[in-house]
Amino acid sequence: MTFLVLIDSFENKQKIVNNLIEISEFEGWSDYSLRLAFNKSQVDEKYLDIIFENKIFSAIEFITELRLKNLLELCKTSSEFSSKKISDKIALALFNFLDLDKNNKVSFKRLVNFYINPQNLIFYKNFGLKPTKVAFSQSYRVADFIWNLCGDQSTDFNFFSKRMILSKIVIRSFVYFVNDNSLNSCATKNFIEQQILKVLKFNKYKNISKQKFSFLKNKLDEILLEQNNYPKKMSNLLSEIPFIRLIKKNHFK
Image (cartoon, rainbow, N blue to C red; front, side, top):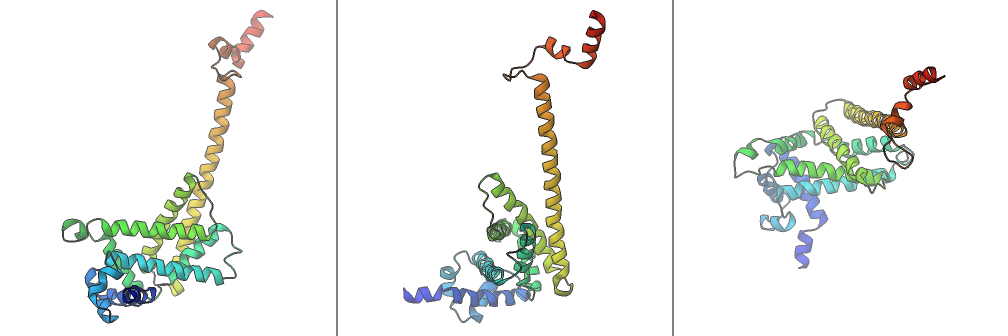
């Protein structure tokens, strides 16, 4: 039992996925590449199902876990992170998360291909929709982590909508990042900031629209409803129209 615990240790997993990232640069992401990583790590393949229950998918999930752990340490030691406003915190956290793999862009470009490979849908022996599902689940996981890191305390529908919106930005930014050849990935940093700015602008206009709609609704309620919230009689409604009031005034004076 102790031996199996050692085999399944965090350190052992970390060693294997580090080798997997190197191997995947040339071999792509697959169960075969994971077996090669086991061999390179000098871990017997017979323990694959113990260490990574769902094989390559479990390995990908562990890489996300590892990177989020690294991100947490980065943000804890950052003097500027805590003083930033929430939108800037999100942008910084997401960029730092991606930048942890600045030297692994080729490998992670292959991971994007693995996520969207059409052959997975064509051949039964392959993975079907599972790679795409894993891509979305891991992006949501990153989004949730970043929101929690920024101190989000939402409990209503906003909890999910915030995370869904950010998970879309995570996916777009990841795809942009692996193809970014700019110095220090500054183009990715700008891309993330622009994506978040678009969301902020949309929310601003949405809130303005809500306020206008609410104002219009209140005005209509004043016109159409009595104080007890029952509809006004048609005769009363007509009598309150300025044009009708003017006719009545001139006719009966």
